[in-house]
Image (tube, rainbow, N blue to C red; front, side, top):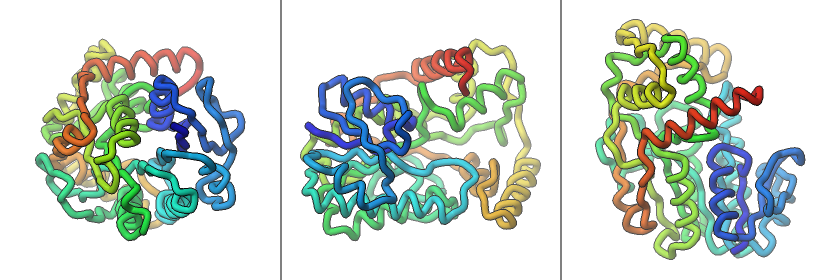
Length: 325
């Protein structure tokens, strides 16, 4: 098949591209910088999802679109998240519909189901805004898909917290704090986390390109394990063979820090490292059912958390030796 991948140089997109190359698909990558490093055997096209003109060319003769591009993290304004994650998606959907692309795979997030308690929540749950700009932009994106006449060709993949080799936003920061003994959990870190190994997500994306049942459907994806934040961090600490323990932060101190971060966001219009929505997240159980993905996509998350984190640590340490982060 001829497959277009956006976000091909990002964390998940790079893994998806490698999976597609391994199975000998004809892969075209829409990238913004000509110097971007891509696997051998891929076709590169320079452009941006915010530019409708380039998307017509990008969709030529394409069977499947894997839309991995998104603004995920960083101190961006709320409008920035909506411009990329909603308007960019709208451009992609319109171009794909005009080109009669058979299958469009959109990467969303389990967070579109809201920031309340989730204990094996399945795909029948409603979309709920949480006040977080990235998550709310993804809610808006899914609503856009549902309102589109092209919706029956779209498969929505909703990963949980993705980890594994190549992750650059959260795990490196956590690992460096673990090295110095300055990693904290809040109130014992007893809440469940919805982690998912990046290779598992890539497998599901590729399966959604092939399986007829995936058309017009949404799928929650995690590793399928009930794991607390403390258990996840301890597993990472062991994978890195670190001796420092993980410290506990009482809830009142965490609340004060989150309140200050939220106030800064209000004044600056940018996302803080820690705010009230993030505090609610770490103080809430997050567990999602993956039975639908198992049934429709033959989804089988075989890589253990220990192995996934070991692979991350190996890749990260090799990256540091080369002078990267």
